[in-house]
Image: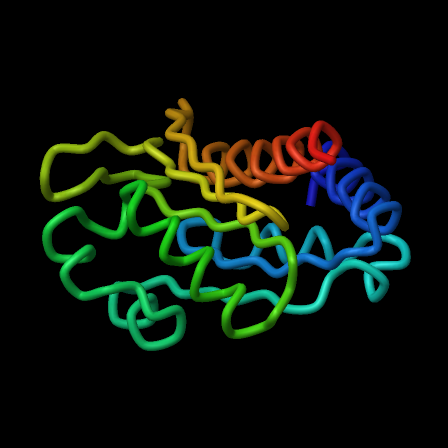
Length: 163
């Protein structure tokens, strides 16, 4: 794990501790990297409880209750899917914050022509859900690392700017 990822996880942890809330992750394309970074942070037991890796559509439906209709009509790499991943993870764990991520890290993109590097993010905050689409360049490892880093840093920014 790179130093930037470790620092981002620690920074998010500090924000979470200051607010007295905890986070759960719902990951697909990053396959648990975000959860690993949070778990490696100092004092992680004070702000991190659960890492859910739902790599396949079937797992997203079974574990996080992402609807089969969403998966069929919009795909797992969609705004609807990450929002449902957030809702499912929060319902399953009862935590106030969730980081959800689903995308095509590469080397291939989606069957619908969506290019590799396309990543949807969802952040379930205590009072709302935010979602964002980003595209990352590079090989699979670079995309995965960059996406995990963005997910952590943006979550800290969102939480810091909220009441």
